[in-house]
Length: 279
Ligand code: HPA
Image (cartoon, rainbow, N blue to C red; front, side, top):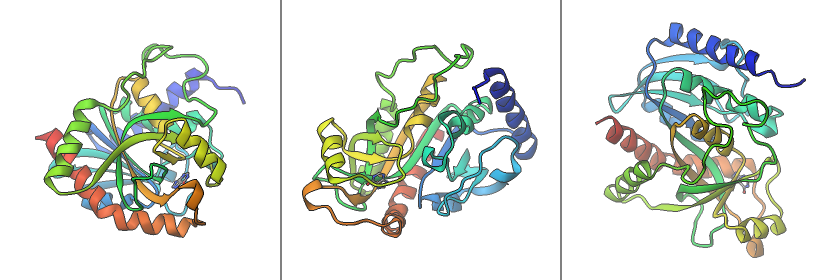
């Protein structure tokens, strides 16, 4: 089926007005909580929830480790709209479908997007359980959510990507991590399609082209957010060590366990960034 921009735009507007009715006035900060990293949602106060399968035109998260709901509430007193669970190409969705919620968030007035994900660490200085602030990314998914007709009301045909991760937000995150003695690595995230993890040769290649961590998400969301001028901050939890010459087998259980162990640090950090932005 070919992509129809008018239909897609109408669906974005429909869902935005549906959510406005369900959740009331929107927040200015949006959160996307990645694999095994949904616990931040428990910190959100005065929460109102809508399950994804109750939202018209919304994809449904097929990964067990994702809850699949939208939460509206306050984090440290600051209004937020959070996606607990996201969509991935490997689930069979296309790039427009997985980024649909970001278009909806923008339509609801969200100006800043804070994103978390689970990623494999390729920088030899990284350890399982570390957090990595994204400084930049490489799109190696073979698709782009902006192909096809462009809606100029959203953004330009050829959006600039010279600084995708907002320098001021990164500064806030760095300071928050320093203040709380949380080790925060920094680096380049490369997005692949998945669902398999990489071979040794692939990890060696991804490291060689300049990436510090590899994962299966985030980049399409950030491309769409930047297309519309939204500010982005993203943090990876390093769930496995991907050193080609010392590679150990990794299961999804290992990835989830590492994400779960690092989650409290990520929660503290995200919450601090939101508070700082709101204050
Ligand atoms: N590769 C790709 N995605 C991942 C990995 C990995 O090693 N770990 C967590 N997500």
